Image 1: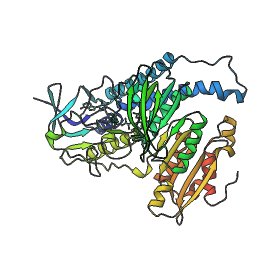
Image 2: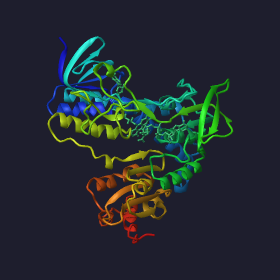
Image 3: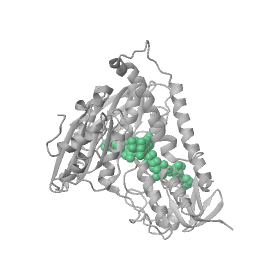
Image 4: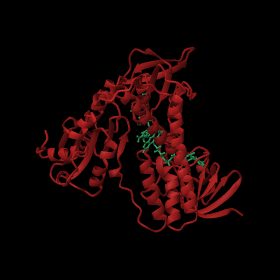
Amino acid sequence: MSEQFDVIVIGGGPGGYVCAIRAAQLGMKVACVEKRATLGGTCLNVGCIPSKALLQSSENYHALLHGFAQHGVMAKEASFDLARMMGHKTDVVTANVKGVEFLFRKNKVTWIKGSASFKSADTVTVDGKEYQAKHIVIATGSESMPLPGVEIDEKTIVTSTGAIALESVPKHLVVIGGGYIGLELGSVWRRLGAEVTVVEFLDRLVPTMDGEIATAFQRILAKLGMKFKLGTKVTEAKKTKSGVSLTLEPAKGGAAETLEADAVLVAIGRRALTEGLGLDVVGVAMDERGRVKTDGHFSTNVKGIYAIGDVIDGPMLAHKAEEEGVALAEILAGQAGHVNYGAIPGVVYTWPEVASVGKTEEDLKAERVEYKVGKFPFTANGRARAMGDTDGFVKLLSDKKTDKLLGAHIIGPDAGTIIAELVLAIEFGASAEDVARTSHAHPSLNEAVKEAALAVEGRAIHI
Ligand code: FAD
Ligand code: NAI
């Protein structure tokens, strides 16, 4: 006889564990199957959390070397201990994953340890044992996209998982892919002293973000000493005695060149992870990119089977997965769970940070929507000056006729936190005028948002 639940969630990442907790809060009997030794998924174990710990550590070191002197704060000698830095990262991860375990106990969610595969539409098998539920949620996440001709060993040719655990600072790190991972982790190792070259297929960085922001971002990262080879592809990476020899070609075709590296980070995107789940056994349909196909309510084509997070369509972000987890649990409880995909922020946690919500200028042009632009630089923000962090600007896009806020894009200090008020503004359907008329504390970085909103009608005060 198999053990019975109302809901079984497969995968204990931000999508799965949040869905499990919310379903339990709503009175359902819930189990979550996770094959890793710890809960929290990619995000807590090898993604968001450890990468942010290393970003913070490397930025602290860099500030001690280059940033604090302008404040009259000097250290006799700046140095770092990589092993201790990694130790801090591990402590932060441990605290977070243990936290999820605690939340499972508190909410009476059963953690089934092991790898789940479907036996039938209402039954999964884990280590030979069967578990049955009315609703089964696929939240198995994603994995790094492989690049033909480049074999990962997680020592010298690494994905993000190896790149957050290097044992020494490489002399030359080549990063393949100028997206979220490449720029965050590339900047970590650059700040710790590596020469870093980013090879990007397209002729710009972070292709999902606003073009003007991406150009400013590249300029700022170049000031940090990062080098860029845009419009270039890697066709081969061969291990040599001293490191790795890469063959590069212009993306549009042309003569090949070689580039020598001590380490290579492959960060060209991630793909849905469904291996070993036995989706074929139950006939769950996939799309052309190997993601689980869902309708607007996270249902697959098989009754009683649902999917959320990185394994389905949409941005591969932890908070998107969490929103979907909550919405689905509420739908299963007969409530009206819903996710507003137009108001999901994206943040690159470099320093300065890059944050974005809603439409980019490129989107609006493609959709032939008429819009107004308001911009304000951090050089004119008192708080940013006091911090000595004046790189970047706020850019707001609103509808030309109605003034409804359509997009917000920020590059600057703490942009990832600043963006929150604009996510809320978009969620509430606010106009740029609404933001402009809202009192913002002085002196705060968020005043740059108010000024950008005023600038939409050409009436910024401080520029
Ligand atoms: P996952 O977190 O991938 O969790 C899926 C879980 O399912 C895994 O633990 C896996 O072991 C388990 N699983 C898979 N198959 C089975 C099976 N058959 N049986 C049992 N268990 C199974 N996003 C942000 O929003 N902010 C960030 O700062 C950020 N930084 C990132 C940094 C890096 C280096 C990386 C790689 C990603 C980052 N992301 C970030 C993305 C974020 O990690 C993902 O969007 C998020 O983890 C997706 O959550 P999920 O629950 O869908 O999947
Ligand atoms: P990405 O999609 O952000 O960037 C990949 C980059 O690689 C793109 O610029 C793309 O044009 C380029 N590329 C693709 N093929 C290439 C090739 N053959 N050669 C050279 N360049 C190539 O993917 P990334 O950085 O791997 O991250 C995966 C996902 O993880 C992100 O999209 C994001 O959803 C999530 N993530 C989120 C973070 C955050 O929220 N701060 C941090 C890290 C990851």
